Image (cartoon, rainbow, N blue to C red; front, side):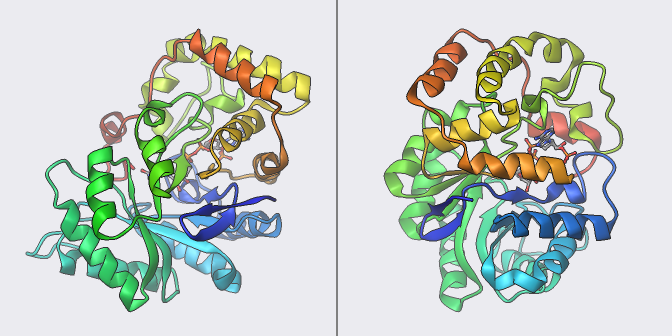
Length: 330
Ligand SMILES: NC(=O)c1ccc[n+]([C@@H]2O[C@H](COP(=O)([O-])OP(=O)(O)OC[C@H]3O[C@@H](n4cnc5c(N)ncnc54)[C@H](OP(=O)(O)O)[C@@H]3O)[C@@H](O)[C@H]2O)c1
């Protein structure tokens, strides 16, 4: 397992997104099994584990806290505060007030059974919210030793610049994959310029890029693939052209398309760290071992050149996910 830096924090070059152990992808494993899988990732060298208060809400942090307890001080543990109230959080000052965030942080620390968070993210940054005030509060948490660094999720370059000026950001965590490259045009170059790490969520485009899901695959419960347009049967069919491109290159290297997609982003930027969600021994091994896969210049260029001629159909938006009828849309 190779390593890289998110700001000043060293992490395995591929982390584990823990959300799916509690929600977002339908039926979840038993707690004992989830803990075993998290331990498996750690044993294979993974040292970055991501959760959020909104996942469940709350139960994912409890699960992750329990799972990482034996090796808490050897990993980078990241969680997030939602910009809106979750169950039983209402206070008159508002969620993004000092008291609102402090309450959320203290509760996350309890659930995670730890006295510090390595990277504490603002889960969404609403258009009209006071970015500077949140950045000041984060700076105070860092001085108090409650968090080591902080970040934002799905923010734009203006929000990043404003925040970074007040309290330097450790990482931005936003959607990034071979299917969703919108942040390549501004946010990722800005992170490079400002020495901010970039954590790629949904790096497998919710599994699509593995090529293991077809237009006939059925999703149930709170699985976001019931509502995101990337998984409309007609879009799944139209996006086969992308999978064919990737499969051709992956087959020649004797690797899977999932591994190729992870290797592609690791090759492209040395400050990007993907955090795939994975709930089986095979997927954990498959995804984490992509850390050691090197792409030649020709292989990388054939992906980039191929992508220029391919249209991507559908995406994954909070708006679509909210149709599931829960606040667990991110
Ligand atoms: N900041 C945010 O707003 C935000 C939003 C979404 C997610 N996140 C974070 O990012 C993490 C990853 O996001 P994600 O779960 O959407 O990522 P993802 O890896 O793109 O999608 C996960 C889905 O892909 C499947 N998958 C992964 N690797 C596979 C492989 N090699 N072969 C076949 N299927 C594979 C998983 O299967 P199984 O799990 O069923 O094995 C799961 O169904 C989350 O866990 C969470 O921590 C953050």
